[in-house]
Length: 455
Image 1 (tube, helix red, strand yellow):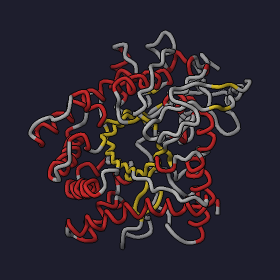
Image 2 (cartoon, helix red, strand yellow):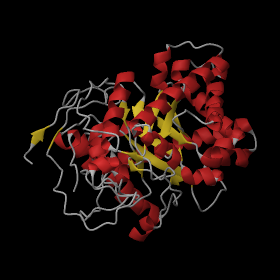
Image 3 (spheres, one colour):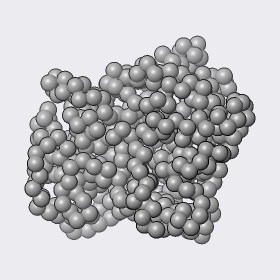
Image 4 (cartoon, helix red, strand yellow):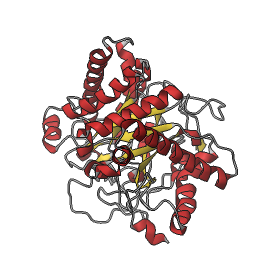
């Protein structure tokens, strides 16, 4: 049955001695981990000695020297600002991959207590009715049961169950593959199946809730606990899916209805971005959600989070930025602040006025870089960029931080050999495993503060 996993395609974005490490917050805190994502875990130092690298041809997908990856930096970022206790870290896990999903190790190393499961879509075998699963694999039968219990639960869900963080799980729909095959997005298929917006909305709402119920039932059964169903959903809309106005309008109206019925639903819309802000088509997608919420008289501070894909801007944009002395963090900051202006303009245009403080708009924005080497390879998001972004997010109280993806938070394969950028490696070979997770979760140990300069 393990062959099943090797058949699942990635559906991601275009792609010492025992020590106590102190972050903000309190150990064994009784606070809701979503209300206070900052923690003070106790754990053993998991960083292993980096093995001597196997020989690699120097290329843009693999970095063995800190300075090569950070051409415009002279030193490490070592000053960590105080955690704000509201911004949290919820990395994307490419749950369709069969490697890089040892979440228990990430939890032990970084204190991780949120995760975003990517990507759920219509099953690949049919479009006869809404039938949702990770990566579109079959959603029933012996193969599915084995995968759900032995892999999905044991590796992905169980570590969150054991830390009482199951309700912090976020389910993500969409991604790059459905951007090119939009019928695999349940909101597209719902509209096709019903051809009536009201009926399609009912069908879609039922499917979204039922999927969250399904994973809750699985985790409750396996753990023997009565678990609270997560109410966090992300919609990654990219590629051709951004231009499909009717399905996106249906989705916007559906989640607005869900929000009216239960204010505890936490929705986000993930969109591509440039340092100049959202593209014109991205603004149009955002407008659909702002309109739907306005029509339902939902307050501006309850709008869905606009989560930014801080990645893959294009090689020339990165090269121009490097010439100007900028870092990848500088570009991320520009993208966030320009999107804040895009959002402000959208709210004023649709609601008629801005009824929240302008700085509060940051609370409606999420930040998701691609760690390490980007698909457009001149872009390299380093650990120094991550620490700068962590400080910026907590200083300005953005909604949350994420990364694409949890699976590649390492620069070596399972045997310790350094490898170039891949689905399970970020390509920064001088770093230790889970350094990005630790940095974004506020665990700045000595290896995060001052990583190896080269290996």
